[in-house]
Amino acid sequence: MASLSSSDKKMNTVVTLLLLLLCFSALVDLVRGYLTVTIEPLPPVVMGDTVTLKCNFRTDGNLREIVWFRVTEGGSSKQKIFTYDAMYNTNFSHMEDFRRREDLVYQSTVRLPEVQMEDNGPYECHVGIYDRASRDKVVLASGSITLAVMSPPKSISVIAADQPSRFNRYEAQNFTLVCIVTGGKPAPVVYFKRDGELIEVVPSAKSSNAAESRGLFSVKDSRPLISRDLDDTKLQKSLSLLEPDVVPVRLDRVRPHQSYTPGALGQESPRPTTEIIPETVVSREFPRWVLSSSPLYYFNHTQTEFSDGTMEVQAMLTWHLNPQLDNDALFSCEVKHPALSMPMQAEVTLSAPKGPKLSMTPSRAKVGDTVRIAVEGFQVGTKGNEVFPEPLFTWTRVGGLLLDGSSEREGKVLILERVPAELNGSMYRCTVENPLGSTNTHTRLIVFENPRIKKETLQFNVADSGGEGFGPTLMMLLLSVTLEFT
Image 1 (cartoon, rainbow, N blue to C red):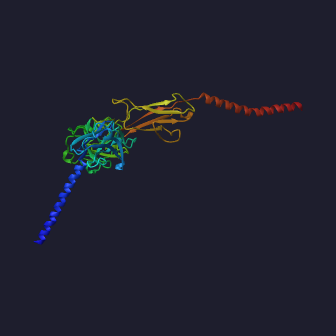
Image 2 (cartoon, rainbow, N blue to C red):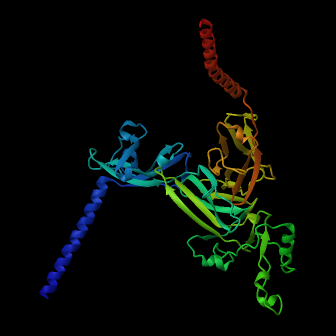
Image 3 (cartoon, rainbow, N blue to C red):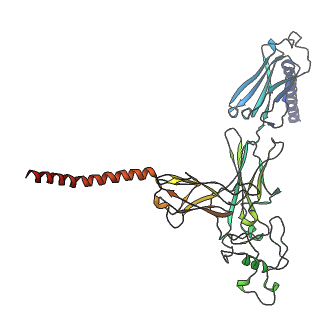
């Protein structure tokens, strides 16, 4: 019983201490006053908008001051952007009885006009009230908010990777479009369309087995060419080998289901030379391509963050290029971003070069002149004369080497310095090509005599001939004089 009595005494002592602490806390609260501070949340804002930060605080004491800070350098530094001192403001009365408890609600607002990316970050609202026990002491409380500033993309462009490159008429090529979007925060959503329809893509991390399952043949598995030159007769013959219900392959249409098993054509197995394969002929310059009824597009993208927090996104679309289906196809890159009211886009039309137009300066070249042959443009088509991707220009001289001794030279302009008379009548070929096709054109160089060079040469010859005849004449004169004296 004595032990129980001792335990009860200890319990009573603990309870008494807790009650004293609660009473003391209540007295302290009564003396210090009541103060809570909250800042109204804000959704992400767009760069250039005007933003109002609102700090609400509730207190039963007398307001002393309000200070707004912008937190910088990761929280290690604070920049004061607004200060309110109640001692110097007549809107608040400080003569009332500070012992009278009255719960008041206040609101302090800070207006940030045309916010920029540097305004992004945390903000703090600090509020101070007078201590109820002594007006020399101030009770402080604070609230914080993080302002998220969004930046819409500034630019968008579409380029072709690894260009310019040559046209390969022997095997299919991988082709990549790169969409570059800069200046967005957060990172925008980028997607591709073909002829106005959204392209279904496969992440490039997936294996090539997915490509084979959808009928996309790799370069190493593509069939060899049967013939390089295909005339209209061969074209009709190749099409006649297909079954009657076979329709031309189009990317936006589904090919009817066909069976290419040996039994589908008769009792005997077909010979290898007459094996039926889906094929098409682009033109006389193109090979026979093994087409896929459902082209597979691979998608990949990278993000780079700049010092101001904005992003640069590079989205890449890769597929097996087919000149027949992809020539004149319209590809667009579109961007969705919360700071944009409508999608941002850039468009390119894949186009093979056609009919390059050459110009030569000077138009009447003379011996010793510097001749400049340049590609000025291309044949105007239904969609203009722009060629995409950028073509490769190669210059050659028909039947000989160029003036500098090289067999060919790349570039949009061919410069021949100090052309000699021997180049008169020489023919120059300009080959223009990109992955969609190749074409070439010729121009003939006519070199005229240069009167200035001819006159200088004539004077030089006359001077040489005069010097050569002067010696014998002088000797004959001296000989005749000598004979007269003797």
